[in-house]
Length: 531
Image (cartoon, rainbow, N blue to C red):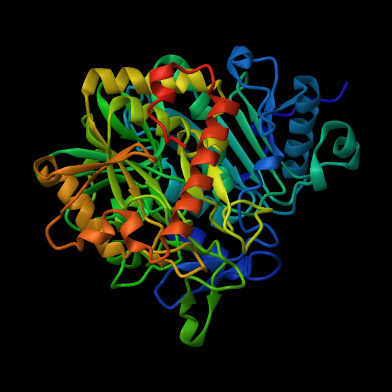
């Protein structure tokens, strides 16, 4: 009988950040990684052909107590036989045991609240992946007591590719996969170089575990104002979550993943994973200034003097990973009270949605379910570039929410009823025309000014206008902003073109709602756009 291997059989080495950086820059400069020391002190790495998430390669190991709550009709929620996965796990451990070099190991945790934190044991093949883990999770300090004993294991080995016997029969394409095992609390990343897979795999797991304990998990950023008011920003990649939460006037809680418990808002992560596009000292100083020793830049080209190009036509999804300690104005403990404001972000490339709207509770539930944006390039593998495409993604991150949607909506509604935050819908996309067809992107400073007016209470005092077709209430005047920019129709010279495209977008909204959420109460359906 073959011996059963455990993670104790894996040869490991434990290094601090400086040692990991040195190892990476000495031994991971060839092959896929091509690690380089950039001008600003960050390490530049490449991730090969896959420069975004491989969400079609994710598998949930069946047989757990969560099976009945997972929406198996969602094609991204692929089941996997537990007995077969036991063999896959053994194959992965044997591969690591027989590897030429030991794996890197760290003890970390997720969720910055010791009442809910999950300890993590992380094993990685590459030193840069362990640096990424140290940035994106939270380091477990000696003598630290976590009240929750549920420990997870993450094994991340790009050099481990599954045998062909798993390919056709079990749906494992190219021998690569992201496997999440709830019963044994283990995550295997096989053949994955892209760093974001590690953090999103754990986030996906927490989006199953925590909601079934009664806590709402959210794909959002969060910050705290000078007077102690918390705001959370929901949004898909590219809509401005990270950018708008990294505000020099506010303290950052986190930029991407949070949980809402009875104690308030809490970051699930220990770092940030910002998109590189548009980052400069002028537009996003907090993010730009976070790029120094310890930060990792994925998939950037280096030019003269090793200056990284944070956005390049060849690779659109340049990413920057850094620990929260790189942000000067951050919230100690990465947690705060219940949100006073909730902001839904959309990047509308059609130029139809207003730059800011105030939502009723019913409208908030409608737009939480029918979360609209235009598809961003590069974040997900297989996305087609070019023509504008609408995207409705439940909860502003449907790929990360495996449970039946009613569970998340019930928790969101309960929190709206209990804590009564104001809810805003903000368009960071286009006005005066669609993308590539005469439209202009709303300037970042205009969006910041509108948000500052909303969050300070200024917009509570101004007159509003109801846009009948979009079924949204908008301010008619905000100091310092041209009135015609507040109503998107006024910004279009060709009104007929605007009306036609508006009708088209409303049709997309209604089609999405009828297809996915027809069983929601009529008052929620009535809160959406109308033809």
